Length: 159
Image (tube, rainbow, N blue to C red):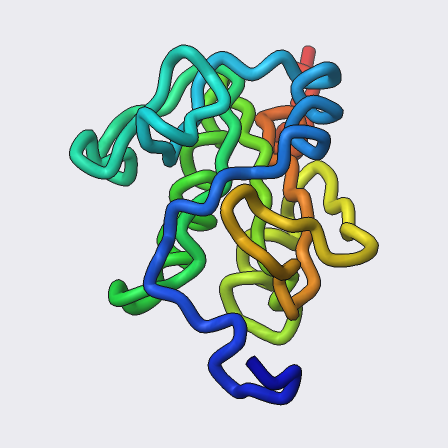
C-alpha cells in the first residue's frame, strides 16, 4: 500500500481496543468501574456496556471509561457520546474519562468538552490493538465529573 493511499486509515470497524499502556496509566489514576462502550473481546473493565446494551439509553453511575465509536455508519456518533457523558456527569456520583478525537473546530467540542474538568491532549499517534497504524488525527482525554458544576452562591438570610 502506498503511503499516500487516501483510504489508508478508513475503516468501518468501530471497536478498536484501547492500547493497554494508555488505559493502564488512566486506570491507575481513576480506578474505572465500567467500560461504557465495549465488546466482550475488547472491554477494559469487568463490567461493560456492549452495543446490544445501548449505553446511550442507560443511566451511568460510578467511574466510567469511554473509548466510543468515532463514526462509522451512524451520523453524529461521537457527538452523541460526548453529550451523553457530559449530561450523565452533571449528576452526583458519575465520572467519565473519554478517549476521543480532538475535534476542536466542532460545535460539540465547544458545547461539551470545553466544560470538562480536564482536557489532556495526546502527543503522537497511539496504535489501537489490531490496527497497523496510529490514527491520523489528534486525540484527547476528556475528564467529565460533577465537581466542575459551579454551585449557585447562597445568599445569607436577612434578619
